[in-house]
Image 1 (cartoon, one colour):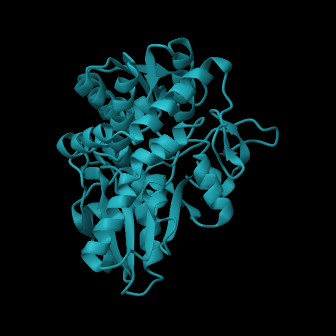
Image 2 (image 1 turned 90 degrees about the vertical axis):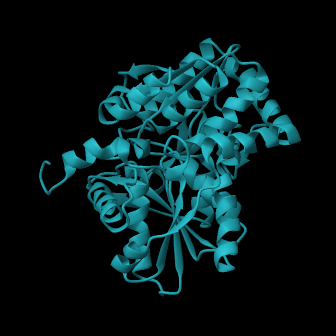
Length: 389
């Protein structure tokens, strides 16, 4: 029976995909119990990925906020520059365990595509990546990285030409080539068991936060913040902390203002998207609406079903941050700490500063810095109101 998170989740897919999903779940459950797989995963994570990633005290950003201490979980230091490596590695090893000869993936900001291309090269598996044409234009450096790593990048020209449409095309490919191909779905979305598998591989983030914070401070942070598009870095951050007293805050893309942006949890309603029942941005007739965000990685009309449940139960609070505020936070972190954040976690940085200003100076606010900003420089400079450089 497809796993659900309360009312959410499930597997609303064509019959041709059911055996593949069952095979994937069986392989994953077997691998989780296999000490050799866990050892191999840990070794690759350490030797290729560079884990564990450190906690970093953002001292000057803390002074800017004037309240609680702000700390960063430095997922931007993982090989490839983003948390996406964690899941791509796990699924790549699963694909090899299942005897699959080809990897496919979707990507929005390009970081998941890069991570999958890296692992495809390392494991000797041909890799093809679907990416919306609009996203290819605004994330051109990552397109070139994927190609240099040996992957084929397919531009998607249907719909809004963004992440939603890239997932559609990847699913079509998988349906056609399911016997030979593994679809490395990049976020905690889609049909069961993908949301659970992605959460499992990304939970290394939250486990390290728990261990490192207790070692460093003798206690957990007071507030933990992560950006939410599909929700992989956020669920990986939050899941190991759900049974603690830590406050959890997910931050969606509010867009330019005046519309819903890409805030499915804040402004959406329950519906079915990409094989799962979750919160979706849709019109009164149930049709998925176009999203807009300065951040390609958050520009998605749905969200992982576990986030939908956490929203309804109130265990995690979700809010949105507008484009201009995320861009401001990008410049804050660059000027104050010498770190260029990706535009995705820049949304979380802004929310963390806003929250820190309202809290005691003895509190600790920890932000998952899910990726680095090299890929976003052209976008940032284009929107920079200080003029061209």
